[in-house]
Length: 184
Image (tube, rainbow, N blue to C red; front, side, top):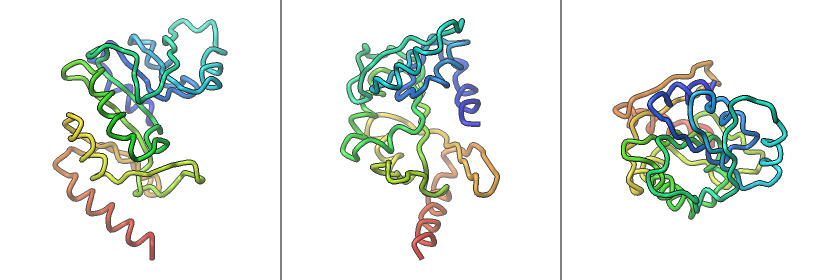
C-alpha cells in the first residue's frame, strides 16, 4: 500500500530521513536501497526498532523532535513522514515543514501522509488536527515547497491513485463538499 507508493517515489533519493518512524517498518524497507535515518522522539518506538537485530540493511536511528532536526541543511534527498503531522499542534505545522525544507537538498522531496477528511476520521481522539488539502498546500508553499502531486487513498471506494496538482482545485472542492455532507 502506502509503503510501496512511497518507496516507488524514492529512486533518485540516496539519503532518506523517516520522521516519526514508529516501529521502523518503512525505514527498514527503504534501507535496502538507500541510506536511511529513522527519526523518532519516543523511547518506546526506538526500543522497538532496535529489537530487530540481525537484519542486513538497518537504518540509522536518531532520537529527536520533528520540530528541531539535528542535521545540516541539505542533508537528505528525501524526507518521509507517515501519520505524523496530525499529532502536531496546529501551531507546529509550519515550523515542522520549515525544518523539513531546511534539511532537504535542492530538488529533494518530502513525502507526507496524513489522514484526510475524504477518508473519514481515524483518530479515536488521538489526532490534534486532521488537515484539509488546501491547508496543507498553503502551509507547504509558505515554507518553500512546491507541491506537485497527491496520493488519494479513497479506501471507502476501493481506489488508491495519484493525482497531479492541476486537479487539486477539483479535489479540494470535493473535499469541502464531503465535509459538508458528513456533518449533515
